[in-house]
Amino acid sequence: MTDIDAITLEIMRTQFESVAEEMGQVLVSSSYSPNIKERRDCSTALFDAEGRLVAQAEHIPVHLGAMPDAVQTVLEYDPVPGDVFVLNDPFDGGTHLPDVTMVSPLTVDGEILGYAVSRAHHADVGGMTPGSMPAGAREIYQEGLRIPPVRLVDAGVQNDDVLSLILANVRNSGERRADIRAQIAANERGGDRLSDLVADHGKDRVVTAFDAVLDYSRDRVTAELRALPDGTYHARDVLEGDGVTDDDVPIEVSVTIDGDSMYVDFDGTAPQVAGNVNAPLAVAKSAVYFAVRSVTDPEIPPNEGCYDPIEVSVPDGSLLNPSPPAAVVGGNVETSQRVTDVVFSALADAAPERVPAQGQGTMNNLTIGSRTGGEGGFTYYETIGGGFGGRATGDGMDGVQVGMTNTLNTPIEALEAEYPMVVEAYSLRENSGGRGRHRGGLGLVRSLTVETDATVSLLTERRRVAPKGIAGGEDGAVGKNVVRVPDLTEDDDGDVSESVGDEEAFVVGSKVTREVSAGTTVTIYTPGGGGYGDPAERSRDDIERDRADEKME
Image 1 (cartoon, rainbow, N blue to C red):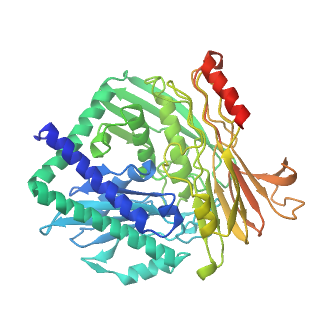
Image 2 (spheres, rainbow, N blue to C red):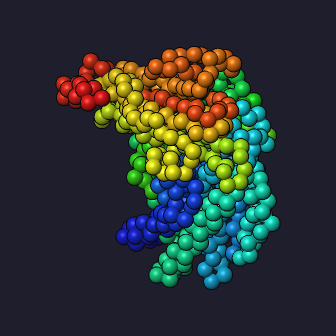
Image 3 (spheres, rainbow, N blue to C red):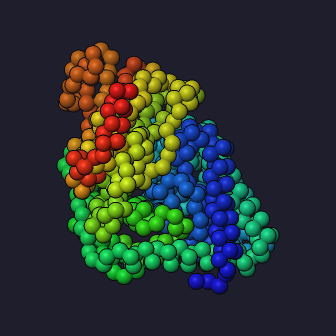
């Protein structure tokens, strides 16, 4: 480990993390869109001058694990003091197009000491549908404006031409402008706080602490890996179609633990597909890092050192390492979840007490927007929580975000104030968690009525294949997407008609985009988590609590 005493290391580690956390606070408090200011679909981090992740705020796993690729890409453009780079290209450092990344060199006395990075999901970046999450996209050009790394601020001077180009190609340009400014402000705060640390500790001590923090996390992870049994562990799962066909799309993984290192190989995974569930390599790696961090010690400071002992191999041109112009918007949100599931499943034999039953395994992406431009236009995006899998130590959590997302919900008051929509229902979904010694968490019911003509896009999973129980636990309930359209007597899209309450509604597929009229109600029933252990072993106290909960419902 780099020569720095333990007390100083702990102080400076927490100070670095505070820089990233404060950046996130500035971004949330300064943004305009509910997606960022309410749901907090954003992430911030601090990197050193070599582009290594030093500290991150506890934000969105799929953002943070993929950030290093964005910074390494920006370094190829020879950043100078005062620059701010903007990018979203999934084939050049990004994840999917709605996630816009800002990278700012942090300069002290004319020398670049590090980089402040913010990534935020913008509610629209253009493309074929409002909200830029089209279910039927077959190439990335349909998903929105593609931005390679470019200087939005050039040596301290804002490049208005670049900003104008971006704003001319998105819906709700005023909201986009404000959110871009919020990201720049967040990065500026990172620069201010790093300068404060240099003033307190000196430049050499700060740089030394960067190395020491990475060494510390690397040592902690390798020690955890050495405690796991050596061997090769396999798992396989599927995505429920790619948005073009309903054919299952397999994901296979082999995880080899060898002493203090891990090799993760996705050979056998499907080739890239026509639809939009392809996931850039950075997203696949991010999902692996999240799973490994969860199975080892989640208290280990998350930074580049955690990733060094882990090697990820993905075939070129596959679902998890596609070639352009593949569509990828669903890969970031849904395929990342399935990667997490298969890596957890592979590690279940190596760390049985640490791997839960499968959670809902989807982000339940719901996007609703109008094609009306200007002041009357709107774009709403949300991911909806569901059941967490039962664990060796207790029941799964109810109605939470699972896996690669870590967002909040949009409060009903904020949603109804910002958008022409009414929330009809928001509740836990009864009996959706799998039975077990420890039951799976319950899914949610989220029902919205749209008060104007709009476009609805759904990117979801676990509508056919249930979240699996583990160690004898039962599977969780699959999810369901229901659309009730006023005065509709026949569904010309071929969806299955089903009685929902006292009215006729239509169950739609897991990935669908459709135009709807004012008065349409969209209801999402999210999956429950799988159960853990034999249901017959459930304790008497747990059974009595279950009965009490049922009476309350």
